[in-house]
Amino acid sequence: MKLWLAAYLIMNLAGLLIMGEDKKRAKKHQYRISEQTLWFVALLGGAAGATAGMQLYRHKTKHLQFKIGFPFLAGIELVLLIKYLL
Image 1 (tube, helix red, strand yellow):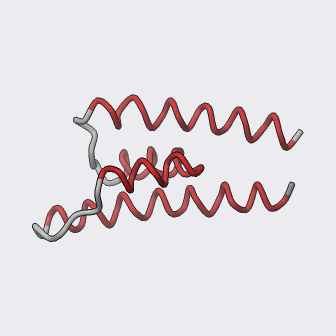
Image 2: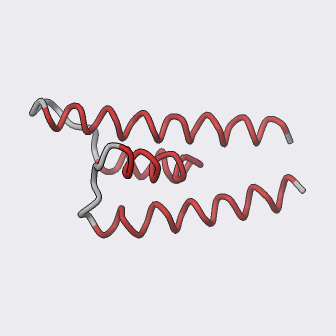
């Protein structure tokens, strides 16, 4: 049970950091992190962190798939986490 919570927290931290890194690279016109990678991290449990990073760094906020998809996925992940931890 503690392992699931730790994995959830780590993946959300990764989601937050990866959004910040992609925003930094975008500003510098450097090689970007692929959208596929952003979604992969979100699907592995990092959707809440990616959503927070999207808002914090104002990154990908005009892309409807991220604007709606990440929060929706974060809600699903939170419900599953609560269901399996309680």
